[in-house]
Amino acid sequence: MKPLDNAGTTSLPMNSSPHRLTRFLARQPILDVHQKIVAYELLFRSGWDNVYAGEDDDSTRQILDNILVVGAQGLSSNTLAFVNCTRAALVGHLVTLLPPAYTVLEVLESIEPDQQVITSCRELKKMGYRLALDDFSDRPNMAPLVELADYIKVDFRASGEKARRAIRSNIRHCHAALLAEKIEQQAEFAVAVDEGYDLFQGYFFSRPVILAREEVPLNRINAAGLLAAVAKPVLDQKEIERLVMADAPLCFRLLRLANSPLYGVRDRVDSVRRALITVGEDEFRKLVTVAVAGALSKDRPHALICLSLQRARFCELLAFHLKEDPFEQYLMGLLSLLDAILQAPMTSIVDLLPLRPAARSALLGESNSTGRALCFVKGYETGDLCSANSAELIALGPTVLNDICAQAGDWAETALRSTGS
Image (cartoon, rainbow, N blue to C red; front, side, top):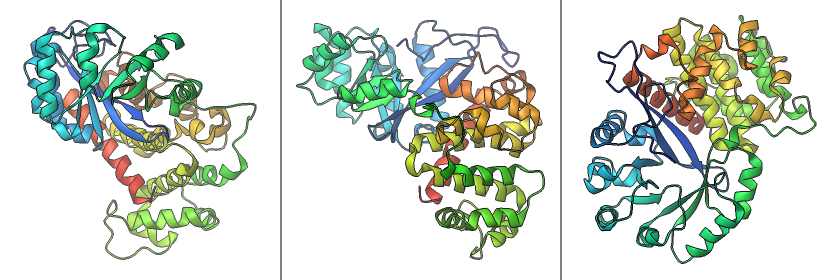
């Protein structure tokens, strides 16, 4: 993998100079065999062009500055943060600005493991940092770093079965965990598990596995019905009460969430009606969606549910800058992964919901103004900022956007914890 700490330069309206770098942060989840998020790799882009343009000391310092402003813990939701390191960052110990307890230093495949690099890695290990070898290839001169490594990352798509088998055989004596990266399909995940990998990186968990089924499963119709109810312009309180009360676990989650610190209520909320009165209509709509997401998390990856809530909150926060309806944008972010959650085609899902035609079209992949926030968020997640281009959002600048991203992640984690998920 080419270093992401200096991924290219672009000229943006907000820049005082065409040579000034504008850096954005994104993150990609790293999951265990049970599809639980254990870490994030922090991804960096210079401006909106997803292009690698070399590495230097200045770019490394700017990366570290970005992490320090937002906070490594916040960016990684208090899990481990994998950070790509240039040679300068390693031998110059620039990375010691980052907290050892949360940081995994990725030694890029382009770095030659000479004595200076090996010595620096040993010193960083003594300070408490974990080391990962990125895009590992089985070269004899890598042996000293293999002995120090906590994680060995293998590009699953760039390496064949024979090459991966050789890697596993030659590193079997070391204690490092094997991490399969660029896993984008459930089938690839299954192969990696079978081959003995410990960790997995990619968005495979967010892709629906749809067989012959063309309708939403019957046991999820109630959840879809609730989402439809809160999507209506005018709330039907009796309808929502009926749907919630018909599902005891969902009712429990909703009331638990309503009484959580997330909403800061003073008096105990003990009914759906009381929840609506206490938190207000707009927040109640969101409360129901979070409770539904928590209920759906029972047999779906936690990472998937968390990502859907993060998208929802991210879209909602961006709506204020785009002059779009905040709840509609929130709902679109949430629904954008419902095909993977329900394991049903998106066309079947949107047909169940009272969405505006523009919102429906955006969820089905059409490019329009209503879908700008969702398109941006998807690009932000993967670091593909070219496809996320939006003049209004570019104008916000990286500091504001990185802060919104961190807020959305924190909110999603807090909301899921509050439901008991």
